[in-house]
Image (cartoon, rainbow, N blue to C red; front, side):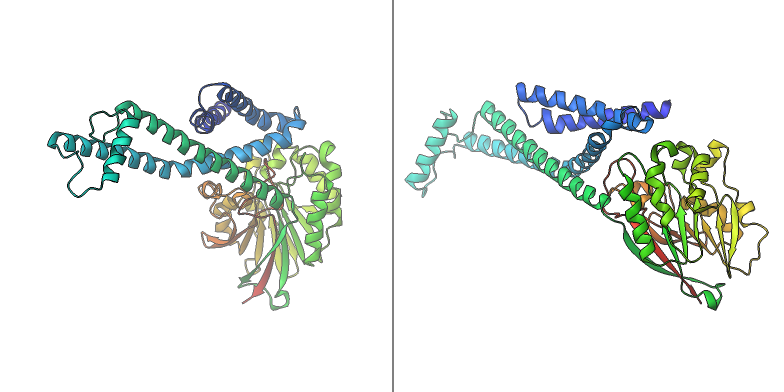
Length: 425
């Protein structure tokens, strides 16, 4: 409950900031500001309503508009936050210039040098006189009254606020549009070679197709899974590893969307481990459904596939559902002369897996950050965000995932099916 309250407070503060920068600052008091304020309130309520209502199934119609607004909101916040620095610099420069101009005019008036100096043209003198007349300055000092300078300052600030609001709005909508196109397109193939010292020569070149975070849900439909299966089948993998977060809903709701997964082709089978979202969606029924689709669940267990061991552990989040990972069961008491590849949904599982001499861990969970620059925050929780890294001496490969969670938007982290080619040293 405390966490939910904190989320609501954060969302409220974000919308207050957006209202100030996009409505209050650039718009004068009046009808336009009142309308903008009303829109900001509606959007502020829609964000938490989407997160709660769509996930619970109470407000499925809110999925598309609600999640798209969350994406636009995020990029408005990022863009406006970045603009705060040049905005502050411009305001300080204006103030410095006005203060310096005022001091210069005062000094000139006191010293009697405000009159046109010898050598000034009559045209220049006339220009000063006209300017003084327009500004109401009858002293001939060239200094504008404080009220006029104040009005000019307000106009400049409004102009600056409107420019920033327009730029932020166009940027946020443009980036979100690009992200939607990327997220809803077919996954790209990412290829990497990983040498394994213990891999038998006969298995040199073994290809693992690694896919994660498919996230079948209310925004995906059946074509989502079909596109992913087509890409997997195109790489002619020896082993297919589905490393969690397959769904966001029950089998009754999404079973038909998962049906194309039965068409996955590989030489030595397809295998599945749970992700944290399976535990939000009824993990046991999905384990049974995945098995029915000819994808074998690895439930804290290990298989021998020729000269290679393939192990899988339940997700770290399974502990709260009474279905925790058991690394000793999956990796203990094995022939350590054989290489072992571990399927674990979260990259952070490597810290528990490393003592068992894992040769390679394949994971997902991070979505590669999904919406840059969110990847910078993901890196605070997970040791590898995307691609191949090394943690505690264990190579860890993290795929970006083939789907999306929440907003149907991907920026800087396109959907992926990863092909890992194992090489014998």
